[in-house]
Image (cartoon, rainbow, N blue to C red; front, top):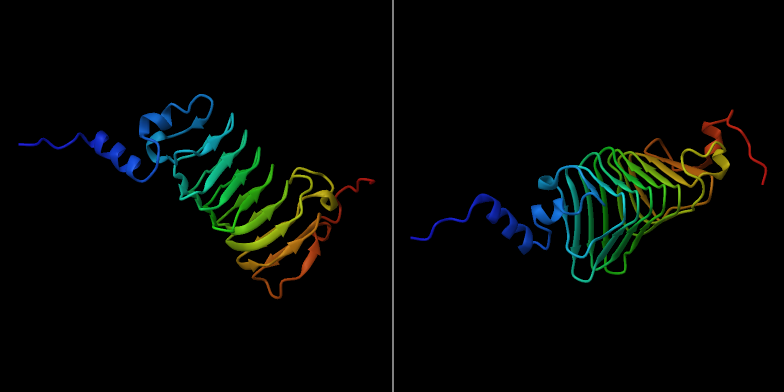
Length: 210
């Protein structure tokens, strides 16, 4: 009589079949990568993780076909259920980017690469579908679905002068085909999508000379 495989072995077999690291292999990413709960984190084989990347519980980094995922140093994936799926596409998440808190989904398919620059923030239900270019310091905030977007890079959210910050999409709804320059913001779901200056929300913020 064939004895059933131990639960851990069956779990590892399922992970291997789906193209993910085993639980032990995921745990062995530490301490270079801060995996907070190896049993609930799924990392695809071939995913490139930089030093100091933080992977919160519920993170999924999945590569399909000829896809690739690179997460650069210091990026934080979570907290919240965060899924990054590269199905025949390239997805790059820049250094010190923050995906979360809140559920975040990033997907790329053939001819739909995604670039998420450094210090980018995706929060509160944001969905990014390639092709998409999110420049350094740009933000997608709230339950916004963006696709075929170009958000110009600039300073991060910590930049005192809003005219120098990366572009921002916020609110709830769909934002497809949007092109925003440095210091611009568009709010989705509050009426017609109008491009505004971020300074209009921060009128007393300091101004930095060019």
